[in-house]
Length: 414
Ligand SMILES: Nc1nc2c(ncn2[C@@H]2O[C@H](COP(=O)(O)OP(=O)(O)O[C@H]3O[C@H](CO)[C@@H](O)[C@H](O)[C@@H]3O)[C@@H](O)[C@H]2O)c(=O)[nH]1
Image (cartoon, rainbow, N blue to C red; front, side, top):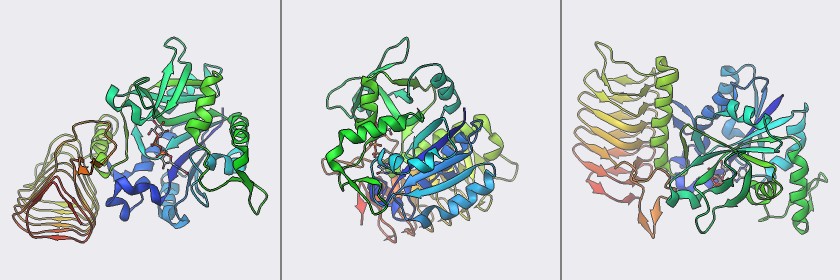
């Protein structure tokens, strides 16, 4: 079977919970475990036999993905990876329909569709095998989450013996099931007939664009979940493959820290040579730590577990860093401490200062504030933030270009 793949990358207006980091980089390109979020998707897709083409579909400017695509072409010379831009947000299935000719060119039999804002072990080969063993049009990757988190997701009720999905309900108001959709699907190409049916059901909302193609009136998006998966479940054409590996959503900027940890742990099992090691004249490394080759780390620093250090970072003597992502060109002076935090590009942290958050209490929390109060516990410093010597920044989100001379706690510093 010859498949293609699509990554739904969304667009600029959707990154609000990812601020302040999305002010400088679109969420799909934010680095976790040393590479952009969607590079993990591509790495998993590259292992699928006969998969030659990956299409990123979204509504960012074309230039946003240009250098990422160049790097990806160098790393995967056998894959053809392109960006297709929606002229506006068309919804999670609208882009698939709009670009159907591109997707179906070369007559693929199957299409993987991956949300950009998820992190997981992407068991795509196992999903494909499961898909080929049933009569459905779609196999959806599922995972179990705690009962109280389930209604933030698409919920599935499936027959335990056949994995046939009996009900699909998108973000239900009351509890239905703790088996949820991971935002990773494998479709037979016959799905485009079902998309057409979904479209016909929305008929009054369709108009024709200047090229004579059908498009949706503003505000009437074609939604993969409600418009396609729900009817597929009703007609018994949807099956679930439950993952045994980890799965997380990347919604808030703080969620990048646990995701970083999960990908680093995975690397420790699969490619430990890509991670930092304890060397006689090097810093002390605890657990899984990624250090970019251009970073300079003092041998008396202690890093890890769950730390990624970006290009050209300088880390001083006596510094302690754990559960943190340190982005490009950051300068951390001696005896500083960075815990449960993300430090934005070009920021400076003074001597003996502490930049610290608290570990997230729930694994699947999707919001930064609740009832107007900040709940995200990871501390985030935006781009070019300066922290003077000997101060403490605890549980804060600091917007770009701020100079902090005093300690602060539980604040969004604007
Ligand atoms: N190209 C494109 N992409 C889009 C659009 N709208 C959303 N996306 C992308 O589609 C993915 C899903 O985004 P949301 O629409 O924000 O949905 P969600 O709240 O994340 O919920 C979805 O994902 C969950 C798993 O993470 C599912 O559990 C849930 O059922 C649903 O599919 C993201 O990667 C987002 O960038 C669009 O108009 N166009």
